[in-house]
Image (tube, rainbow, N blue to C red; front, side, top):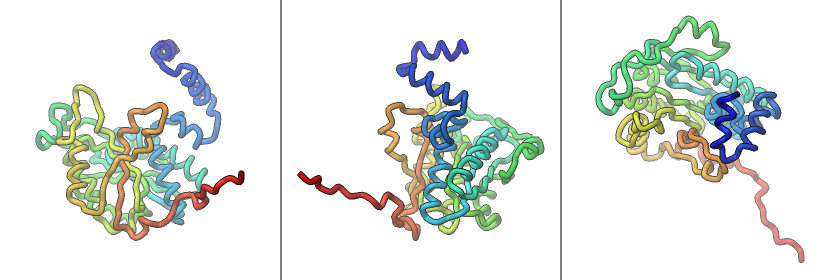
Length: 275
């Protein structure tokens, strides 16, 4: 409580913060309302999954998949299960969850692109058996992402992928994970909501376009003519910006057979008013 009160001193919108804290404490409003105001754990996970599921519903899908690359201890995967339960209930859609990890922590950084001044081999090791006892429906995909990402679609035959959460830290691992998008289009929605954890950071990490996850994104875009990872701009209209807004990218497959399917509001007319 003392920490919360101190934070209000420098808060430009203290009344809003107090009201939202009250809503969060007593879980007021439905899930979509709490998600819209950031009153849920990992709202970036909820944003990606909710909007991916919404798009899938508009395209007529009854089941989708969400992937997390980089599970570590498993808190993110457990959060995904929470969001999946709420979104399945709200939108009446089935959601499968897959978590990719070596199970042994980070591999050895290969060169400067993997930021060895910040990451070390063995960081974020997983207690695989303990995590399995806590998961309700998420499936772990354990192994080197260079192999698991490439084989995943053929081996698991997942429902269309609607959201992908990237937290592999290293350039080399992220680049390997992005190769999954080379699989047949039946495994993907035409637009996929993606989150990249390690692209903002602090004055220690100094993430940039020539190393880490940002480099993997840029190389993917250069290598693909009709498939692109691009930042959405609708967050610019938000009165209060959150850091995670800058970590959202949308995967676009312009050549996808359903990319041009109409999914917007069909009632868009601006008739003249009678005088």
